[in-house]
Image (cartoon, rainbow, N blue to C red; front, side, top):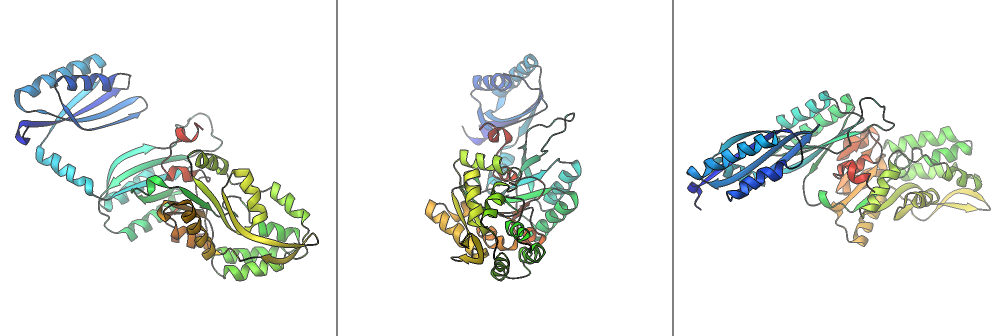
Length: 409
């Protein structure tokens, strides 16, 4: 059938959602040998919004199908509207499929209109069009208070960005002032096929810096905490700070380590995240500037595949203030991420790295997706995305998982 013999019509449907609406309408279209060019549906609070773009022979043959669709809509107690689409407009729309696509996640304990308004205005300023919006978190009660409130919506957008630097800076400002996390990713094959997630340990998988705890138990807490803070903020070299802190642990009893390990404060959402990653076939790793003693404890607790950290030297039941092997610093973390990916046959763009400190930046920047988790300001500015409003399971929303797929496990 030549183009001039075709007629393209957009059928817009609204009303109370019920079983059989799509089946009834498409049965009518099938009677007239209509071709479905596009279809989309959304359901908000049992209110249906359905669009069907279909092609049918032009002329008198199109009138009966519209009449029968109206009758079917009356039977189903829904409203329908018909919009004719020109061949030229349709072809222009088809060609727009080649535009760059992006995924934006907006995360927070709750999502306010002010947050969504600010984000979508930036998208408009950058000439990006929103193709779809979906909610990834479950519906929340307005009566009962949730123990762990969390909200996430995902926007699919297309277009050519006017100024990415300006857009990123604007997102960061909104994140800071409106207490919301905004993740911006290219919608490519790698985003849909992440396979390896590497985590920093201290202040990421656990809500403490173990070396600070050990120092406190050895009576040198203030000295070590000051060095740790400077290292995490990138003010002094990590290797230098590590050696200084290790020396201050000399004489600490080995018996202390076990008590610290069994009382590690595991970060909110970590168990939920690891359970989901394991269920869906991801490989996981701890890449830490901390210690293997505690990393291996977490490995058993959370079911993690790889652990790479620093090994304490212990003699006669006491820490010597020295370490064994190479220091796992920022550069070493990046090298280990790459090595694990190669061992597992995973492309580097299929990897994710999660961390909070300056020594995590090399692996955050190397990974396909680097996530600054409740991170220091310098790290948030340098990483591709960040999570500061939710627990570790917020990572799952950046992978596109809906709560229903997380909680079904």
